[in-house]
Length: 160
Image 1 (cartoon, rainbow, N blue to C red):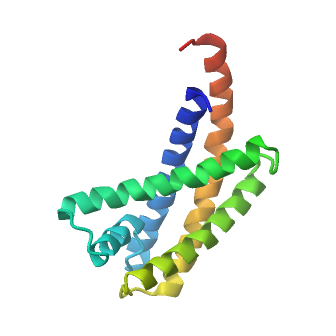
Image 2 (cartoon, rainbow, N blue to C red):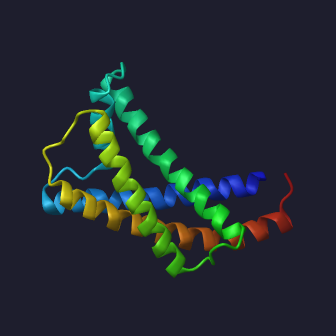
C-alpha cells in the first residue's frame, strides 16, 4: 500500500465516520436518547476500569471510534481492489448494512463484557446504529469513488 492509498483511506474513513456520527448525534437529539457512540465508548472505558483521566477517556473513545471506522474502510478497500464487489451505491449500502450488523453484535458483546446496560432504548439504539452504518457505507463509497480520481491525478502530476 503506497502513501496515496493510505491517505485516501484515512480521508474516506474520517468522512464516513463523521457522517455516521453526525447521524447518531441527530438521532440522539431527536429521540432524546443516548445514541452517541463516542459517549457510550467513554462509559464503556469507565466500566472496564481503564485508569485514565476523564478527558483522556473521552479522547481515547473518539480515537477508537475513528480507528474502527478506518478498519471498516480498509475492509471495503480490500473488497473493491480484489474486485469482489463493485464500487457502487448498492455495494456501499450492503457493506454498510453488514457493518451495522457487526456493530450491533460488537455493542452487545461490549455491554455484556462490561456489565453495563445503559438506560437507553436498546432496540432503538441498535436500529439507529444500523441506519448510521448504512450512511457510513454510502459515504465511504462516495468519497472513495471521488478520491480515486484525485489519486490518479496526484500520481500523474506529483512525485513524493
